[in-house]
Image 1 (cartoon, rainbow, N blue to C red):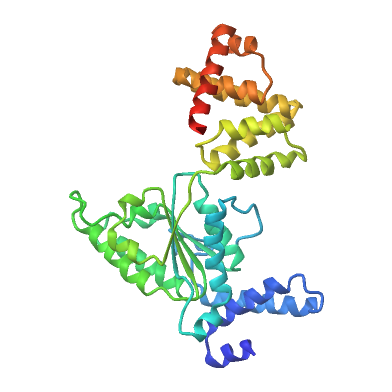
Image 2 (cartoon, helix red, strand yellow):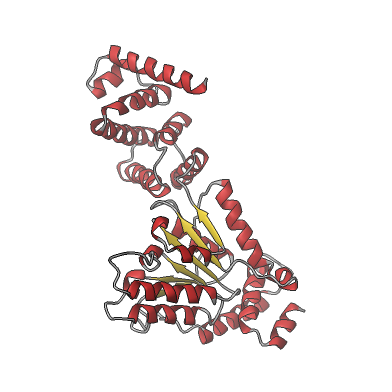
Length: 364
């Protein structure tokens, strides 16, 4: 019934979107013939290719600042429960657009992701596109910018005009480069024009797609830009549970993970670093295990202690952290720790007592 209603209305964008969602849900439904699924998939693909006029790989000069991808299954972002709930709520809105339309509402059209580099903003955008069964259209902001007066604004108009033609997730990374405050004293007027274009285009964005913008510097955004985003999600550095889950996933590529003590040592020692850096650490360990045929616990412990030692070299007060983690999780003796740090085992004992006293004060 929904297909007939959309077809009679001539709403190609919504019809294509409905069929994408149908195909996604039908993938594991054995009651629907495979030939039917294949035919529908071909129709949806033909419709997308006829309505979307973005740059294709064989047309690199058409829109050099755009790239389009059908996001395949892959690693999902590991996020705090609060952030995950907010994203799920937006996806639920788009998956139940008919219910919202019936009461005169539309799903969230614009989403702003903020957070430090490496916390997962890009992977979130990819995940949203995949879960909505929509193509991800990424804008290369550096290529979008032009030294010619008014050209950057025109490029933005072109991006939004093409993206509106069929359902898509339009992803604007490094968003602060084109949405800076208009009170910047160094601006000669071009910045104001760009922001004005953005304000108009964001306001006119249709409900059948989603604009996702990401920035590491939310403080640089123009105040009026904030009001154009219906939802703002701040993604923080990974929590203890997220770090543990991320490490487990990365190490599981070996079909085994370090012992609990080693894993917990890494979790504790990596408080305050991004998920991207944490994944890089785990992958470095995995490479050594694969290439050098070394035990995973030995590799992970060596890599971790080397990083902790670098912190001590930069800041002597980090010795307490080194002593605590090495004793608590890695079962190193005070003499072994002292030898690594170039201090006596007596001093190691004093540092551990100092750390314990400090922890007791915090708890009280």
